[in-house]
Length: 224
Image (tube, rainbow, N blue to C red; front, side, top):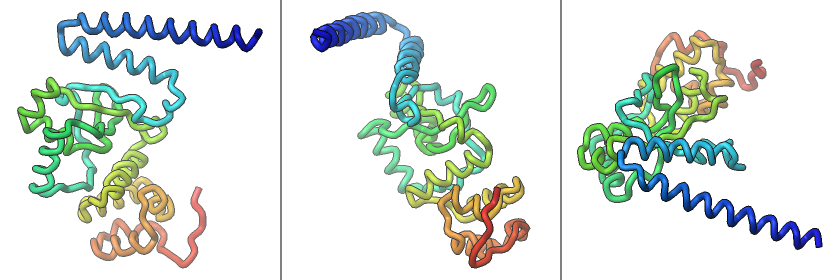
C-alpha cells in the first residue's frame, strides 16, 4: 500500500512539473524583446542549476552574456595562428557554439579564464554576432578557482589540454606565479608540468626571475 501511494505521489509530482514547465515555456515564448528573453532564460537555468545534482560542474549552468560585457584576461598563453582562427570561425558558423567560454566575475566585470578566441570570433565577424544577437555563451569557473594564481593555472590547464600555449607568455605567467610565492611543486601540480619541463622552461627563457625560487632536486619537499 505504501509503495502504491509513493508511486502515485511521484506521478503526481511529475505531472505537476510537466504542467509548470509547459506554462513557463509558453510565458517565455510571449516575451518579444530578445535581450529580455535571454535574460529570463538565464534566470530559469540558474534556478534549475541550483537544485541539480551536477551543479559542482560549471558546465551544468551555461548562460549568455553580451560580448561587450566580457573582458579578456591579461595572461592567456594561448596563441592561435590565422589558419586555425579561420577554422574556429568556420566551426562556429557551421556547428554553432558547442563549447562555452569559461569566465569569472571580478567586481563589476566578467573576465575570461578560457575561450578568448571564441569571444573574439563573435566580436570580429558579423555573421556570428548576428546569429547570437551579440551574446556569447559562458560558464562560471568554480569559486575555488577565483584566486589569481588559481585562475592562471586553470587557463594554462585548458590550453595545455588542447596542446596549445605560447612559450614566451607561459614563462611570463610562471614568473608571476613565482613572484606570488608559488613554489616549483605548486606550479607543476597546478599547471600540469613535470619538474623537467619547468626546468627546461626556465633554461630556455633565461629569465632570472624564474630561478629566484628554490632549485630543483631529485626529491623536493612538500610545500604548505
